[in-house]
Image (cartoon, rainbow, N blue to C red; front, top):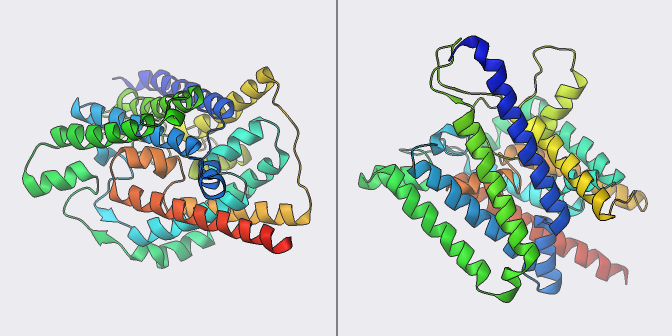
Length: 371
């Protein structure tokens, strides 16, 4: 590839990521896809319908990602999730903080973007608060504390922390075959669990699970296949175009929200450029907004009072800090990361679910106490 061809390829990557972000926003708005809502439905109502949406999306993402690994199109080691250093305390603690925060903020990072598109002004406040907290945890005072504390508890592994790499190291079997067997097997098991009950075969469940899972796979392909250069014409190094991490990425909605804020504030600085994370974030808002307007569900929404405001602000702070510390949110770790079969992603997902459960129980206790 010639250097003159780079702008065109970068534009293709960005437009493709933007289109997939639009699709995610439209699907999430149409089906009420929400991890926090799924946890609350189980705790308060015993209803697993929305959880089946999310599990189906995980299964589809696993099958798609590992299928591409088996074909030799992608490698888990190209992502931030499969590094040989397992930040297990950061994954768990960050997940707990994020899970609690998403309950207080009435939704995780992706749901906040979707609700902003549908007219929620309080979600817009949460979005700005989360962005500031995330940026401070990436590069500011909270980031210094993070690196000096939880990030120090790192477990060195003999191979990448994705399961196919670890099993390949232990057995000598080909990683591509193991990706197909482990990723395909676990993904199919999750899909089978979802479809085993009538509520898992409803239209919204299938649309959300299959659609969101396919979007995650699509962004992996855009970043890891379309935007991958074996040899960059300028640096002569292997590279991935238009990503903030300079590695292969899929959807995530905490650090990219911070990068979006940074891009908007420092727009005149030519070093600030559009990335896959920024355009997919904007796409989610616009996709949700268009779907809400067309479906007649667009509504302006504000805070109910001081307590409601305080809960959402605290929730935004916890999501910003927790999402960066855990290296992802319910989408970044719970879908994109878990699809790579990385150990840290499973730990972060467990932390998020535990934090969400605690948050829902806390809210239930407060309601019961006020009666």
